[in-house]
Figure 1 (tube, rainbow over the protein chains, first blue to last red):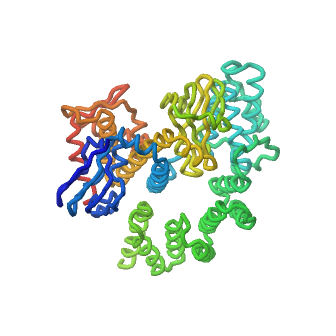
Figure 2 (figure 1 turned 135 degrees about the vertical axis):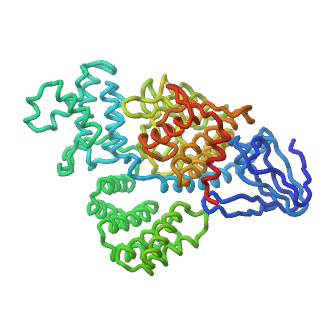
Figure 3 (figure 1 turned 45 degrees about the vertical axis):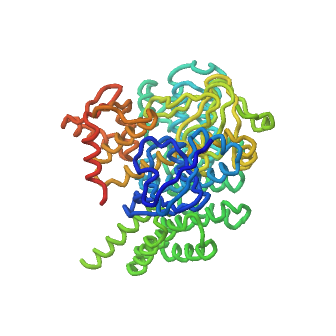
Length: 373
Length: 214
C-alpha cells in the first residue's frame, strides 16, 4: 500500500542526481515545485506540481538519477508509491498510463528532434543510401532472402530513387540466387554479375578478379551516376501499410535527398493539391518551402511559408519554418527582417526546440557582428 | 502474461531468418514478442553487428512513434517468432486491454527520453574533447542506474568500441579516434581490443563540468 508522507515547507523530497530513485509521488495537498536547470539555456526552471499530479515517475520507472529537486514550498502531503505499488495501481487505471504514454511520447519526439537537429547532417547516412547498403551487405553475404526483403523495401519507398535501377538488379540477383543456390550458398562473385549488367561494355572485358575489387569500391560510393535515367521498369514490392499519400510523400522526400529539388517540389505540390490526406498535406507544404529555399527562390520561399503559417498557425514545424524565413530574408540581404525572425524564435517556449534556438542565436550573433564590422 | 486472446488478428508469425524490419526503413509499427527470439542488428562497415537478442515479452521498434523516422536497426527472427504488431490504428485498443504492455511501453519511453536528453547534453558541449569524456560519463550513469548504486573507486571499464563512442559524440570515427588518442597519451584512458578503461571517472566529471556552459 502507498504511504502518506508529510513534508514541511522548505524541505526537499528528493534531490537532482539522487541515484536511488525508486519512489513515485502524488501530491495530495500543499505546494511542491520541481526545480531544475534547463539543459540548453542553463536557466533555472520551476515547475509547480498540481494537486493530484504524479511526479518522479520517469526517473523511478526508467531507473535513472532524479533530474530535478522536488522542493516543498508550503507544508505538503504526498502519497508515496514504491515502483511495484505504482505498477499495480496504474494497471488498474489504464487511462493514467495512456495519459502518461501520450505525455512521454511527445517528450520523446521533441528531444529526439532536438538531438537530430544538432547532429551534423552530412555525417549521418541518408535513409535511402543506408537501406541500399544494408541490402548490399546481405547480398554479398549470400543472405538472399534478407537481401530480397531489403531491396524490395527500397523499391517501395524510393521507386524513383538514385539507386533504384541498381536495387532492382540486385533484387533479381537475390531472387535467382535464392532459387538456384539457396541461402548462404552460391558463387562468391555474385555481386559482380549483378553490377556488371549495368556497366558499359568496355568493362565486360575486365577479368573477374579486377571487376570484383572494383565492385567493392563502388559499393561504398555511389554506384549510379546522377545523370542516369531513373529506373523505367521497377518491380516494386507492394507497399503494405503505406497510404498513397505516404508513398508519394516518401517518393518526394527521396527526390529531395538526391537534390532533385524541382522534381521534389512538384511531388509535394501534387500531395497538397490532392488534399486527400490531412496528415501529409501540412508536411508536404513545409517540404515545398524547403524545396523553394534550396532552389534559391527566396522571394517565393518567404511567400510560401508566410501563407503556410497563416493556414497552420500551430504547424509542427513552425520553429523550423521561422528559421527558414530568417535565412531567406538573410539571403535576400534583408538583415533586419532576418533578425526579427531569429528574435522571434528565441522568444518562444524555451523547451519548444532547443537546437533551432541555438542555430538562431548563432545566426543572430553573426548578423550583429557583420552589422558592426 | 497479458490476455491477448482477443488480439490474434494483430499477430504475425515470422520464419527463422525473416526480417521484421530493416534499418533505415521508415517505420510505423512496433512489436511485442509472444514467442521465439529476435535479433537486433546493425550493419557497421562490412560486418553485421548484433546489438541485442530479445525474447518474450519484450517490445521492440517502439521508436516508430517518431513518425516517419527511419529504423535505427534491423530486427530479424532467429527462430520461428510470433509477434503482435501495433500501429497507430490499433494502439489504443491494445493498450487499454493490456495494461501490462502499456506499462512496459511506458518504461521503455522513460528510458529512451533519458537516453536522448543525455545525448543532447553531450552534443551541446562545444569542446570536442569534453564530448568524448561526457560519453563515458553517460555510460557510467547508465551502468550505475542498472546496478542501483555507486561503484567504489575511480576506475571504470566500458565494453564499447571507438565507433560506439563516435556515434554518441556525434562525430566521425576518425575524429573520435584522434580525441580518444589524446586521452590515451595523457594516460587518462587505456585502450583494449574489447573495452576502454577510464582511469579516473572523477577526473572526467570535473573536466566535463568545467566545459559546460555556465
